[in-house]
Length: 55
Image 1 (cartoon, rainbow, N blue to C red):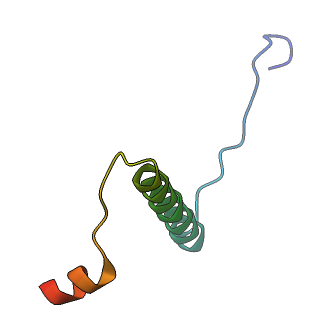
Image 2 (cartoon, rainbow, N blue to C red; image 1 turned 60 degrees about the vertical axis):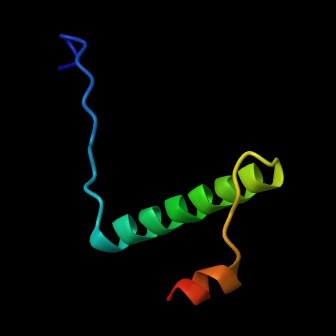
């Protein structure tokens, strides 16, 4: 492989716990982006009281 200048990479599979953690962190990032957009006045978020009243 060295002679042919081929680089080998090790690809590690994501465990179930790592996947859950990654998805959780991504959801927090998305929520933070929504809050920032709301503060800039780009979107309107529903209040917690309104949300609970819908249930």
